[in-house]
Image (cartoon, helix red, strand yellow):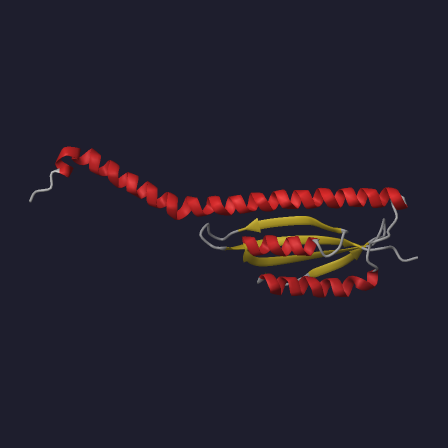
Length: 172
């Protein structure tokens, strides 16, 4: 029995069907999974924005109740070693590779703060989870620098340079 479908379609029709099948497999293999990840990241963004707004409202209410500019609620400088141990345990929890950590205290011109710089290697979702948890350690945390780089586009791990700052209560 002779197949007559390719003869009716011709070479352009067969090439078109091949391209259509390739596009469908590419979409369902690459683009569709990324759409679900994008949706989950957008949901996380909405949740974080709502949490940030609630914390800002609570902080604004607390500042107006006790007077703005006071350092109540900030950890003391004696909590710095515990903070560093918590950052290290968070890195282990999220599977980050910490090559080295450098830190320095600053505070000659204002309230004391601890700046922590570290190069990290991890998957992007693990890095996001680590930074979310690291920022939640104290109310005075700030992300001062974040540089991301991949050696190849297909590499799942990113090389990140992170600088975090944590404020402390001034000691009298």
